[in-house]
Length: 107
Image (cartoon, rainbow, N blue to C red; front, side, top):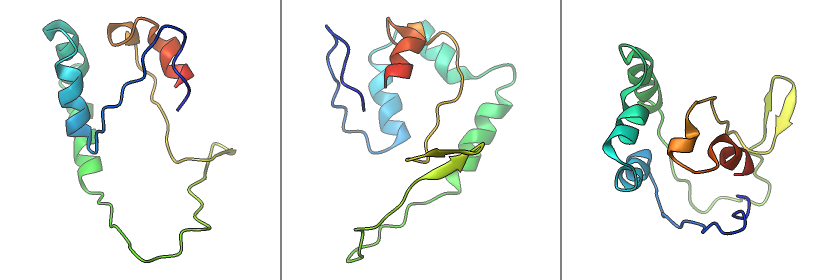
């Protein structure tokens, strides 16, 4: 994670699940902003499909394994990324952070 911009404070939320992250965000946002992020567009079918898609994956902890040569990199559209993580395009990020999309790019 990148260092916070000058004047910003790094948050240590200690979230282990998306649900915990949502709960932390809920107490920091007004109702209108929470609704914007939580409702999804139109009928909300894509939001529901995303929730269902991620629900089928489980992380299986493995103990006493050699992790000295773990490679989590992936190839995305021909480019190599060191972590299998991406950020989908979203609008109105300034509702969650004063620097909006710029703050997301910094992270």
